[in-house]
Length: 115
Length: 114
Image 1: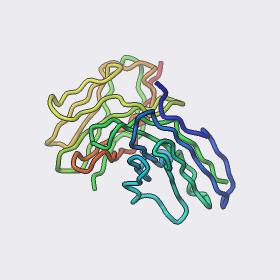
Image 2: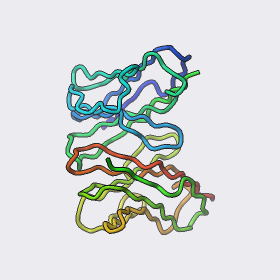
Image 3: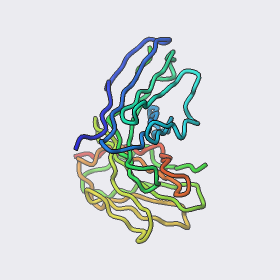
Image 4: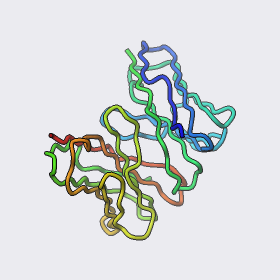
């Protein structure tokens, strides 16, 4: 069974440029999460989707960040414009449900460097 | 809101040594507890979990963790580490009543010297 797939693995951009990350969850997983992981820290939730609905986006900086999951399967996270402080690893995870006991499975992440 | 603290940021030990990583959380209600591991160049993967029942849980690769409710702790242990246990370890918590929203600790980077 394929795991959570993210692309690209690495991205280097200059500040003020836009950037997008893509995630394909495990087949059949209706809940999808985007996390931000700064260097030396644990992942922090940005947004959580149940199917195509964003049910928790309270931690998403909406002035520059946006996300979509149009068909309830794969998802895109966008930053426009990127700032130096956005350099981090962006993780995607999925689970088969939203109940607290559903295990979250993580992708390999996209490492963003903003110059 | 709940928070998770991992006391050690870096641990260096030799093969065959015993490992214990501390994890404390702040929330007074019912919680689910997890340890995730990230090997170099790989994705985060679940090591073990605690939902209810026996507070001593066993995971993959010889790891175990003990939930002590009175201490709000969920420490990870392995009696004898191997070089392949070199990785970063993350403790995570979610609150049963709040759905599947994980809060992670800051991680502990473990280096096992051969």
